Every structure is written in C-alpha cells, then in structure tokens.
Image 1 (cartoon, rainbow, N blue to C red):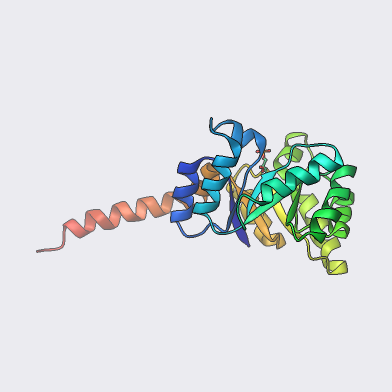
Image 2 (image 1 turned 90 degrees about the vertical axis):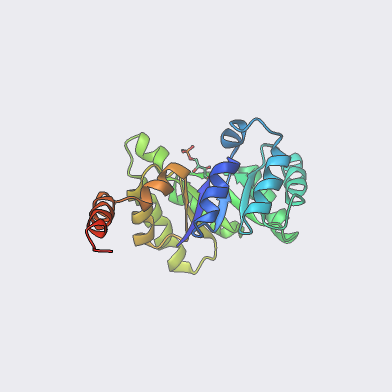
Length: 214
Ligand code: E4P
C-alpha cells in the first residue's frame, strides 16, 4: 500500500519525506489555508520535495472553469494530480481532462455508488473519506471494503485512496483490505512509528550497555 501525507505544511512534508516511506501528498483548500502562502507557490514547493503524486484541488463548480482551473494547476509540475469534486460537472470534467492526459482524483466520495461512477469515468484515483463517515456513526471502513469488491469484480483501474484518516488503526485496516493508498496526517504517521514496548526496550538496552566493562 502506498502512503501519502495529507498535509500542505512544508516542515511536515520534509520530515515525512526524510523517513523514506512517503509516496505522495494530498492537499485540500482547508490544509492550504493554514499555511499563509499563495496556493500555487506552496504546491510548487511541495512538488519539488516529493517526486510522487501531489493532489491539488480545483474549486470551480461549473464545467468550463473547472476544466480551465485543472489545466492551469496541472502546469505547476509533472506530478500534480487534480482533485475534482464528486458532482455531475466533475464527471464531465474528468472525461475531458483524461483525454488530455491530465491525472485526476475524485474527492469527497462517501458511497459505493459514487465510487462506481468514478471508476467508469476513468479517473486515476477516488478519495473515500472514512473519518467523516465514522464521525456520523457510519463505519467508514465498510465503504472501502465495498469499493474494493466492486473494483475487483470488474477490474477497474482507479486507485482507492483511503482519506480522512484519524488514527493508526485506520491505516492498518486500509492495508488489510488492500486499498491502494492511505493518505495520512503527519501526527498519525508519527503514531504509526511508536510502540511503548519499543521505547521500554531501547531504554533497557541503553542502561544495560552502561554495565558492560570498558
Ligand atoms: C484527502 O485527500 C483529504 O485531504 C483529507 O483526508 C480530509 O480529511 P479530514 O476529514 O480530516 O478533513
């Protein structure tokens, strides 16, 4: 499973990239708004740090402006993927963008029916927001299982991104189901590394090392 970092923060992205386990980045307008920098400038910098796919979101809701915005965003760098909202105009836009070779990621997927249409549209990725489903008392991970089954049944090529991840269990469950990508906030990446027994074990080895005669 590929791991993307879900962040627009340069310090977090650099730190995560230095671990050597990050395959890409997802951003959204909320994440970018926290950074106090023009979006294009920020996205350029992110693309220069991470060579893998970097998702940048189109905010236009009408077809022509959406397609134009996607074309402009795709000029930022070769590894830019355009996040498209999961609405009718988005489906129409992806048809045009795919024909132009522009890579797309449908965002805000909350149902298997939406994911089925995404796959038929030929989009490269679908981002299913599991944490936000958990927040309203639906089991988000069930959606990933359903999408995985549907895509397997028909050999659809769209990659499943498990998004809106809130904890390490979400990441492990995504891997068990066989999702293509988990996009993970920096704090959760740090949690993935940690284990209390690792810390206790290191402490004990360091103390015992001091007892070894020089
Ligand atoms: C995915 O691409 C989104 O940026 C992200 O996962 C949204 O998650 P949230 O529910 O934590 O805002």
